[in-house]
Image 1 (cartoon, helix red, strand yellow):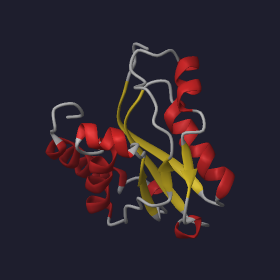
Image 2 (image 1 turned 90 degrees about the horizontal axis):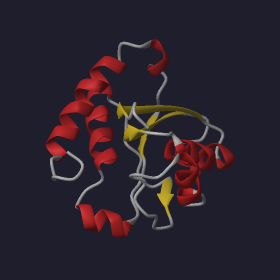
Image 3 (image 1 turned 120 degrees about the vertical axis):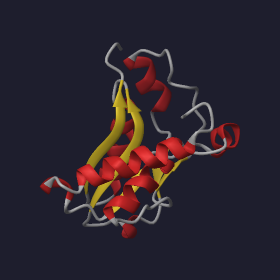
Image 4 (image 1 turned 135 degrees about the vertical axis):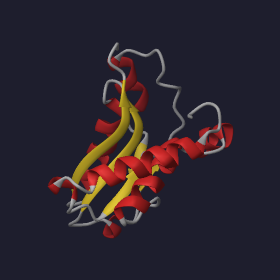
Amino acid sequence: MKYHGRDDIGFFLGKQFGLELKKVNAYQEITAIIPVPLHPKRLKERGYNQAEVIAKGLAEAMKIPVVNDVLLRNRYTQTQTKKSRIERIQNISGAFSIHNPEKIANGHILLVDDVITTGSTLETCTQAIIDNVNVKVSIATLAYASNF
């Protein structure tokens, strides 16, 4: 999906995931879905943001809006693939900023990525959000890397 332009797979899996999350009480309060953003350079290289495609599938199933203009990636970073947890944290540190915080203030957001490996990207995104906005954050990923 991620490296072969199969955004249709991401949307389908996101939609199926959303149908399951709708059944869980903790996810009934979600007010917005935010995909982990790509830097514009990486978006141009890849052609699409896999987290955003998954988020759109989730949004369709859960009837919750995707918000793309609050969490922004303001620094281009090296790929996280094959980096240790410490290297990932150092690589991603300071890469995200918050704009238009009023769009999610006092809500409950679902932060979406494709895969969680060490959690450093989601942790950094969450920290950027909660440092700037009064909001509850939950996360959702389609997969996790268990051999890291």
